[in-house]
Structures are given as structure tokens and as C-alpha cells.
Image (cartoon, rainbow, N blue to C red; front, side, top):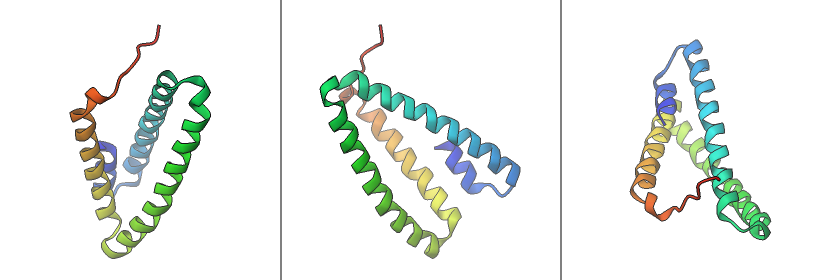
Length: 109
């Protein structure tokens, strides 16, 4: 969230490169955490179905958001889109914090 906000406000190419590295690294950590959560909370026989549903949802949302954000970028510019993305990430972080009790994490043994 913070790297997206800083990237949107940035005009220096070198700091943009460093923010991209930061964003990529944090995105990889998020991916590992997501996969671990799925693998520890879903029965093994259901994993293929869960992963298939997850991919369908991700690809569908990606397609729709590409069209929507492409249109918004044409209307308002790239800086606005990065600020909007940071705001949406902030809202999702707040919602995750508010509803964290709905998620049941199993600790690895």
C-alpha cells in the first residue's frame, strides 16, 4: 500500500525503480502467505478445485479491472490511478483488520 502511494507521488526514475523492487518483494511475500493459508486450511482432495476457482476469479477480475482502470487512466491520468490504488489497498487492509476473526490460521508444527 505504502509503496503504491509513494510510487504514485514519485517522479524520480531511480526511486521508482527501488519502489518497484519493494513492491515486487512484498507481493511475493503476500503470495507465499496466501498459498500457505490455502494449503493449510483446505483438504488436499479439494485443492485443485480451490486453485481453479481462485484462478478464474483472479483472471476475471484482472480483465475487468484492466478495462476499468485503462478508462480511468485516460480520463484522470496515471498519478490519480496510483493514488486510487493506494486508497483501495488501504481500505482492504482496514477491512482485513476488522474481520480478522473470520480467518482461522493453523500454526505450522
